[in-house]
Image 1 (cartoon, one colour):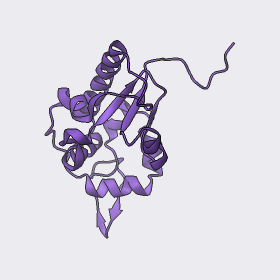
Image 2: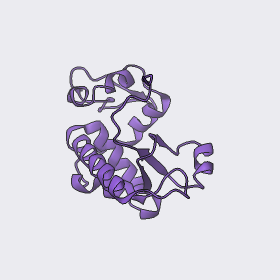
Image 3: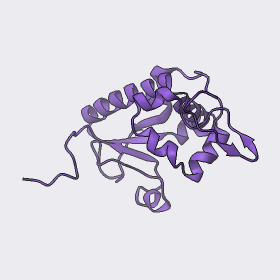
Amino acid sequence: MPTGIKPIFINNMMSIYGLSHPHDSKVFPDLPEHQDNPSQLRLQHDGLATDDKARLEPMCLAEYLISGPGGMDPDIEIDDDTYDECREVLSRILEDAYTQSGTFRRLMNYAYDQELHDVEQRWLLGAGENFGTTVTDEDLESSEGRKVIALNLDDTDDDSIPE
């Protein structure tokens, strides 16, 4: 195991992958906080998502993940230009993560094998909406059962106090 990688023990076996590669924290600076105190779900995924080979076409990752536009509220239409812009940025981020992070590659390969190969299991992109995902039962109920990733390109800090 490379230096700096913490071994993960699952089912009395040691993961040969760890939770990240030393290069990952340079590219994705928020990873160390997750590496130092991983959740049980992260540990579980580490044991399941073991294929770090570059099997998927990086330029197609957004297509594998997103089926089209759609917001948290099914009745609100997503602006085409905003959708295109958000999808392009998301595509670049996914491509960079897949090509540069073995950890992300393992998770993306696993997600594709488990669900994303089926177009019906892909997510909608709520472009221009406040960041969020429909991961809880309550979220799914409010979105009428639709899986949504909502994001925007507004670089203002939501936590800042308006002047």
